[in-house]
Length: 228
Image 1 (cartoon, rainbow, N blue to C red):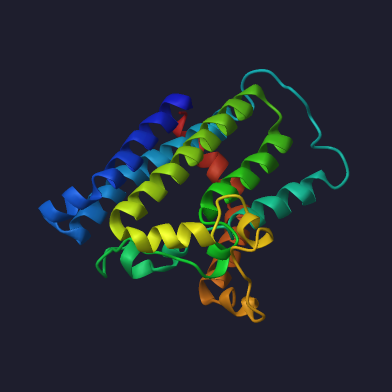
Image 2: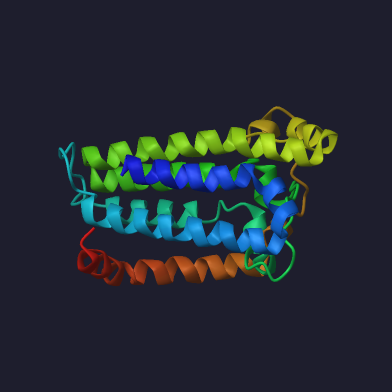
């Protein structure tokens, strides 16, 4: 699993680092297609392998039968998907219909944490580690969180390279640790902050979470059929 995630990280972050050169060479839309064509299959491979091997290794604990555990794990997993980087909502850019750009964000979830997907991954890993309880899961958790910690540094570096002083000013007003900039007084949540969350993509995320949960048996069957 570590090898798969390492390969994914090298491809995903390596291509992100080469984005300026790649876009200059073949254009922003074509580079996004190359990026997705290489990254998505590796992500799918990682998911299938994880499903098949999640209980491998040593069983460290088993709390799946305790009251409230399933509901807590489900709720935390559901919550983790709301911590998405706002650029994910620009579906036309994601699909390379519109020309992809490297945005600066300071509204919505970005007020809470500058790297929401890293925190979302932490929540997801905590929930699934509690549920699975295997040494394989703990190694996978360490690898995922390590990669996202690197992603925080790498993402800031890319934003600073792209936006310069504008990013450095935003960095001073935001934080990686959720709510740190708020409690330190560097970020202010406006009175109508809820409006920044009242967006159609969050409805899509809600439907996606319910759909993914319902599809868990089919995902497991697909993984078992592939036999990875």
